[in-house]
Image (cartoon, rainbow, N blue to C red; front, top):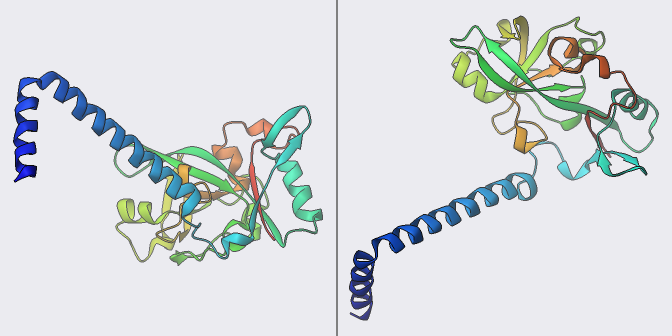
Amino acid sequence: MGIFEDLRYSLRAIAKNRGVAAVAVVSLALGIGANTTIFTMVNAVLLRPLPVETPSRLAAVSTVDPQNPGFLFCSYPNYKDYRDRNSVFSALLLYTTVTINLTGHGDPQLLMGQLVSGNYFSVLGVTPAVGRGFRPEEDASPGAIPVAVISYGIWTREFGRDPQITSRTISLNGRPYDIVGVAPPDFRGLNEMLGADVWLPMMMYPEVYPNVSSVNQRRALLFSVAGRL
């Protein structure tokens, strides 16, 4: 009975001070929403393990410059040197996020894409749900072999989970790409905050990368690198 009495008293007080009550409700809603958003971000970035093979064996590789404190990205030439000469990792991979226009499926759409090294999926131990990842020759010559791996979400939304998806193409920035694989449902890349819709071999950078001339500059620290110990 005491609880019901308190509830009736509270309702009468709210009815007399509706402005104060509205401010309190809005404040509570904003607080709950902010906490939910922060927890979602922390859960995605820090708590939930990456959906890759043995994520504890992956390490980020950064550039350290005494004149610029902090952990910086890597240049593409440095990545190639690290990849070919290091003795710490069994393999190194590279990736960077780009925005790409999808056409040919109704109105044009802006997708979140990633340019990745040809060994990206194999180093991560990610097996595509359909098809395959990239082959070494598909990441050998700039602009030569337009192939793509699409996300499970794009496969579902734009292609209706077509089982023959690897015989189809996807138009990105006005150029058709052969679809060679579909990523697993829970995989959107190593950066959970910028989940990818589509992955392209790094050598397709002349078609989609905004700073084409800087890719081969050693001081252009533009790319994320990770290695498997």
